Image 1 (cartoon, rainbow, N blue to C red):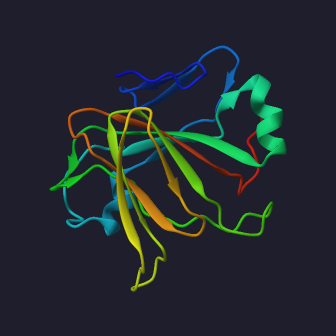
Image 2: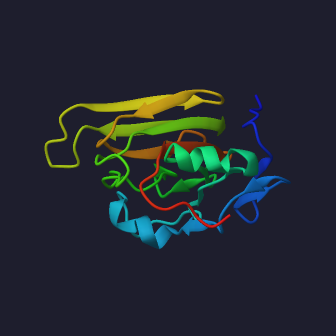
Length: 178
């Protein structure tokens, strides 16, 4: 199944990342390398794809940019490498969003799956007692909401192919330059 994100952005595999079409803005990619996430892995000395994932925070269409800024929305695209990290599937580092200056709270996040399958892991706190925990599997075109303040991370549920995921969250940093 293919998914149309509604603007001209394509996932690239070699090199990992994105291409932006006419009328689309996006930043230089941030690559998350294996060494950066080793401390969170079951086997920190494992082999795996490097980079593990690429992220482009603050993408969209030129005609929607002013509205995104006005509404304090940040639209980001992430793609994960195919393969595994030792015995584990490819995944992101877990995190909790910082408190946003625009609303005074940690921000929620909406995931939209563009390709492949993903499992969004979330827990109510990032403490030793996480309280409520959920693992939500989603496929192409499906949405997953992570509540404000919850610790969360993404796991690729497809070891054979790259997974394209879009994250939409309230702005908690300045938008990049156009």
